[in-house]
Image (cartoon, rainbow, N blue to C red; front, side, top):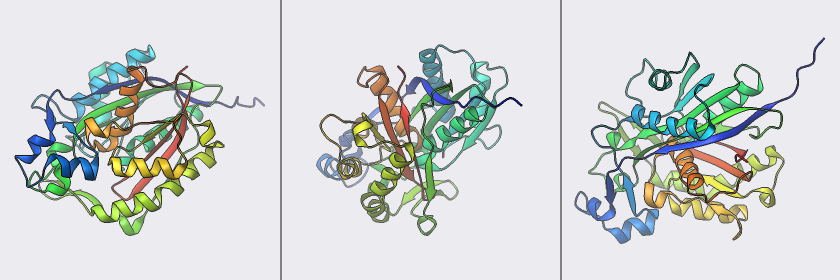
Length: 317
């Protein structure tokens, strides 16, 4: 009897895309009763990118995917997973559209929607598929056009939302480069963040979300490291959902981040892009040469549903 050789997956490349349309806090001032100081103080956001007519969830996903595929040096994959709350159609799904646009030869195509934790869920599914031997390579994308489900008269939410996409490519590896996932949900908070109605509109109970983020996110992020068998001494990069700088900062502090840790804070210039926020921040930092090759990154996302997920990944060497 042949005993299967243990294996896992590892990251091979990053890609991202953002619309060229920059909307500053001063632009938001013209829409609702707010100001730059109020927005910066409460969210840390300075500007965000908003989709133009030619941009949508699929086109941005394709652009990010092209960059990630080129970075990984691949032309095809066995599996495509797209995480999004803003796909244009139910069928064909976003992953199928991305696959067709990129000319892939017939990968498995999956869309998932766990809102702001969607990328981490998708990475876990890709890693599990590769570890199980049903795929050798996988393309994972987070892509959102939140601006098209934003109530631009609601100053509590319109200051947050933005558009963009981020992608990673994973490949089979004898040495696992992605830890087992910690994922879960908080049923009593299922309606804390929603995109619903006709037409669909994003809304949230900001105080409830902030309370969970400041109290419980540290515990869950610590569980991620425990499951990965590492401590903060082993972590180089903290890549959290870019919801609000006022959440990212205390979460990092609560985990014991020091000056040597790279804490991603792309939210300042990209806003909240839901499932796209972690891969977008990672890819921008990676291609800017700001991340250590072969280093370890702690990923953690949370949001609508109410869901959370995270894992520790090894950056490409």
